[in-house]
Image 1 (cartoon, protein in one colour):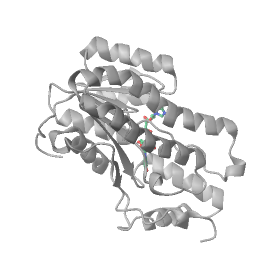
Image 2: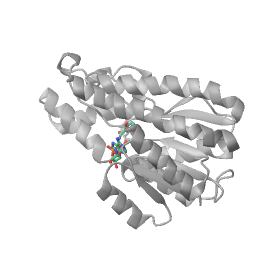
Image 3: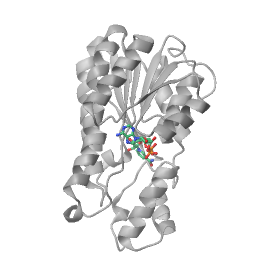
Image 4: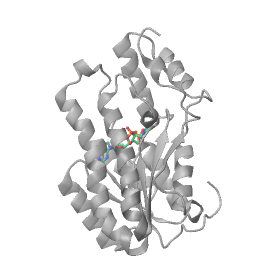
Length: 267
Ligand code: NAD
């Protein structure tokens, strides 16, 4: 988004989880472009090094958000650096397994819930005391799966529906303190991760990746894949003064998902 948005700028500190690559990196760079002070965390040291090289103004923590001790250390580092937090972007989330419910390994279920749901909770509980001091904004990364079911992706769907519920609950809890909470619900976003998901789905069903890509595009009314910049622009809007009355919402950034049911095998 070009131009300075009111309510953003140098007095705002932003934390983006899993910000070293993918959508999180794009969001972090968008806030840097608004002159905000940005801290990211990520589990991947190489990705962090790459991010730092490209974004020397940002600060970083190496943290696995599914580990409470890592999250506590990340907030200690953020507090030592800035002493404040205004905008939390709970971006971190893994895709989890692509398999029928009867074939999902319990360890894979636990890992997906642990990163996508528990990690979001760990990061939020330590952010709230900061956010309550000055008012602020929490942006949770959900998915267009919260508008329906998603065959072969049970743990991911469970975690994202839970995030939708937490978004509304936290909006009600924190609204009186001037903290807004919203969920972003992207459809298929162009990038490495969606290609991995497509390849897994193709393998699981014994069809070509191209066919799955066409199926995914067809799920959107506008027959499109979303770009990371589309997500980043919505995050900026929600965190800025323009979004000052918007809270508790699950916002589709997906060209309107008509249905995910065409993902069932033997279309
Ligand atoms: P990605 O797979 O590209 O990963 C981005 C970053 O997450 C990587 O740098 C990785 O190292 C980091 N990461 C992974 N596990 C972590 C952990 N435990 N702690 C800290 N960092 C960790 O993901 P993405 O496509 O950029 O997706 C970002 C968010 O958007 C996720 O919550 C995802 O569910 C959501 N989303 C993505 C899509 C899509 O099509 N890509 C669609 C809807 C929603």
